[in-house]
Amino acid sequence: MSESLGMACLKGLSRAGGRVALIDGGMGGRQVKAGLLLGAGLALAQKIRQEEPGPRVGVVLPPGAGGTIANLACVLAGKTPVNLNFTSGRAAADSAAKQAELRTVITAPAMEEKLGEHFPDAGRRLDLGNMLKEEKWQAVVWSVLAFLLPVSWLASLGKVPKEGGEREAGLLFTSGSTGDPKGVVLSHQNILANLRQIEGGLGDLRLGSVLGCLPLFHSFGFTVTLWWPLTGGPRVVTYPSPLDPQALGEVISKFGVDLLVTTPTFLRTLMRRAGKEKLGKLKMVVTGAEKLQGSLREDFEEKIGVKVFEGYGMTEGSPVIAVNRPGAEKPGTVGKAVKDLEIRTVDEETGRVLSKGQAGILEFRGPNIFPGYLGRPDLTQKVLREGWYHTADFGRVDDEGFLTIEGRRARFSKIGGEMVPHGVVEEHLLKWLKARGGFHEGGQELMVTAVEDEKKGEMLVVLHSCELEVIEAEKALRDMGLPNLWIPKKFIRVKAVPILASGKLDLAAGRKLAQNG
Image: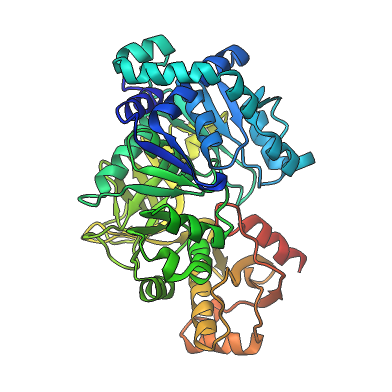
């Protein structure tokens, strides 16, 4: 059985005890060394064992020193941290807490005050600040012991589980972009395998720091900017929210961030608000969650002087599946699969495995693929078939191994018997807006969704927050060669296009706006 995530963190932090492992940009740039971080985690782990005998502990905290220590302490105590999505609405958060059978949640008074009546119903609340104060001297002792003792002795003394394997290490809930959240169980093997895959994909590129602003309940925020730094990866520079581009630009510039992982929506805003002065020293930018438009990639490289690489992942993949990188990239694709991950495409109707280059539903098999959904064997059986994870995405793999995402099943509409991709229509509309000067770089201006239609099955609806002449838009789409079936039948002006905290389009909210419009 492979080692546990807790052991991997213990090794990663104890080996570099004097190195700054975390800079809390939301707390004025407070620097936390690896040894102190580990000491606090070990001290808090003992407290958590006393307070919660169950297997899981809820966490309601933003990215930062507090959120990092809370998650670290949970895995050192042999517990599964469950970071609840406090932006998804009370009903979704309560559903997640109930499914996880949470009885205890670690949080802070500031979060309780901010969320008020929307705070998830996750059982007894423990104040992280008070816990750390109570364990202050124990944390100092553990920090000294981490410096003096061999890792194996430290693990035994701290009662850190040494073996992990296929046991549960993390529990994340899907964003709810298409409906109710599902609990995605990630094993120790899943997370550690993905961390190795991330490291292997960097090649000779050496990164000293990564920006950690994505929520801890988001799969990228959970693996890439939480566990990677704690297990020996780059230093993490945290900020509590990805929604403040001006502050993020300051943090990136002031603390010399090398790697930025974000979404195209957030990157567009960041480019406009922060500019080259703040972003020009980044070594690498990776986007995911939604399609990276060629125009954004080109604009960022021209204005900021830094290349943008598109990647692809999903919660069920722990999450990194594929990524473009220096020396191995192909614009328009999401790069090559990470090491030890197999990809194939299958026919949606028959399930027949397709030849390389043929577009179909994507399936993945590898050590980072999750074992199933929490308490839902019915859903698990639908998507896991002989070790292959059957996704909701259309794509194809070319002869060189580069993966192209055609779109999500939820982002296709069957109109008159033909599958119409929402993303392609969006891309054409944005291209037209930019050409006529009606496009602003400050955020997502429009999204394409669909509602039921008696004649054709479904019809496309455009939600837009910018000025838009419908007749001109329809003509432009036809002039660009889109078939008549692909031309949206309805345009609705909205105050803002709905976006999730992760930066992805909120598909459920968008469809609801279209239905009510």
